[in-house]
Amino acid sequence: MKDQNYAATKTPEIRLARRSPEYWRVTFNHPPLNIFGPEMLPQVNETITAIETDDRVKALTVLLKVSF
Image (cartoon, rainbow, N blue to C red):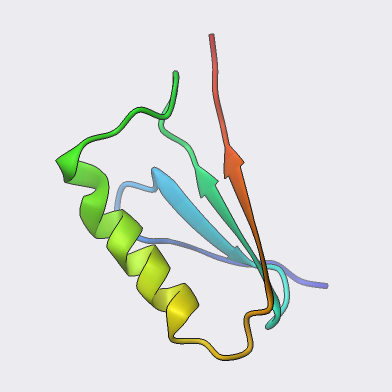
């Protein structure tokens, strides 16, 4: 199974990996605690829209990357 990755925007705080047509993985990568504000809402919206508009998606994993 080959990953197809893309960043929702030019600064990839949110990454969407299409592990297969049916299984996608969303990674929030905004350390240290993944706290974000209005500047990230376009990325969230674009990611949700991609998921909602693809009828093949059946499973989704959401990962939060943290660092201390």
